[in-house]
Image 1 (cartoon, rainbow, N blue to C red):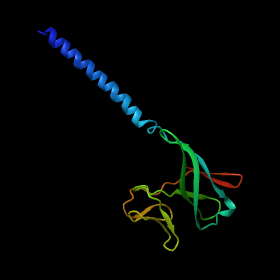
Image 2: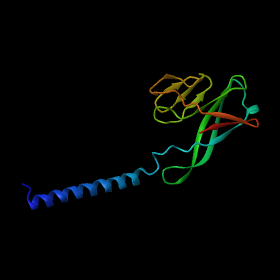
Image 3: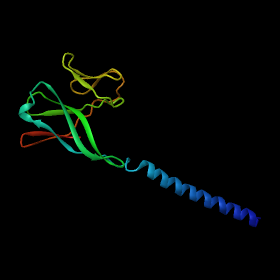
Image 4: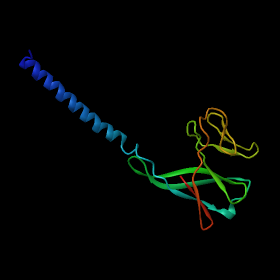
Length: 152
């Protein structure tokens, strides 16, 4: 038989547990903020197509205003644009897929290199050596009035 004392004790623990779960849910939402929502992407101007010499890798820096989990920020980055024929373009994000260091183009060796952990990527963005688990990220591109743009 369930005594009055045991019933009140069980009721207390059920209410305390429900309160703890509710508090944990609110605290988790506060700490996580909007970080689980998809990141806002923006088109950045790479430059006039006429300025992008075929066969050469072009380093472009950009800055866009965006919102992170809690505040508005100026997001800066580097992308690499290349074309072989002057009509189709490939743009890579310069962020290494290992630990997010910035890769740089080594013209004399014809590859992208990550200075942090010796990651090496081919001209096509494929991993040649080192710890990076994936190729460089190719960005979506579009042409508007002779200006090449990339979605970052």
